[in-house]
Image (tube, rainbow, N blue to C red; front, side, top):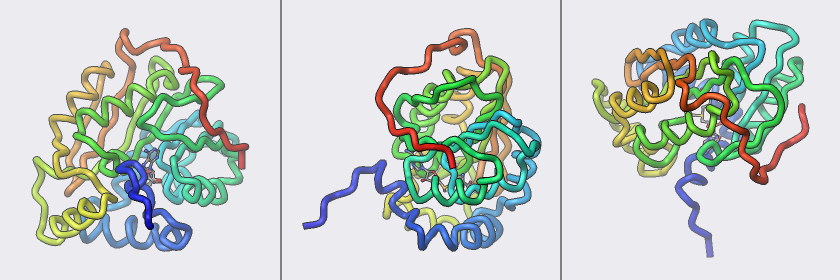
Length: 240
Ligand SMILES: C[S@@+](CC[C@H](N)C(=O)[O-])C[C@H]1O[C@@H](n2cnc3c(N)ncnc32)[C@H](O)[C@@H]1O
């Protein structure tokens, strides 16, 4: 008998080694241009504007974005993903930067030792996670805040299920991905993301681009500063 996958497992089960081999072509090449109407170049611009040499990449996929935009040859680069295949694929691509690897669920408290990061990216992760955007963004930002410098930046983008114009092909693809549990964004609204950002960051920005919203939040509000790193057991994988 096949065991039922949880919603969290369904969100990343698609990232097998075989699927990751075509991820850049399918998602970053075809889907961004023709389904979501948010060109990958626009996301690269976001990375170029915010990535630092002390960076945590959450939900690595194939490691495409840090590989193209890392501003230093000797950065501190940490990769965090729940899925081992993604971590391995990204670590291989980014091996020149000697990344730290953390296999963890971003919906739970995160144990990452060492200095806090100046930049943290969560690109195309929120629309995969189960729950409503205000709740899941709040949970993710709360788990990342203890690992961010007080004046650090969190940035990324996510595909919305509400508040945007979705061409027919985008609507059909999103419906299919939601049925399969690869996406959980039918209730994801722009307002939900803005609420989560404004509660935690002194300045933030959102910009709709096709079916995506590109965002950043900078400077933690007082209540989120200097939080202790949670002390829970987690799997840290040796650096690649
Ligand atoms: C759509 S891919 C985005 C990859 C990359 N950031 C990009 O923009 O191309 C989503 C990534 O989030 C990861 N992911 C999904 N659920 C997660 C969770 N609960 N905790 C940590 N990572 C998760 C997946 O394994 C995958 O690497």
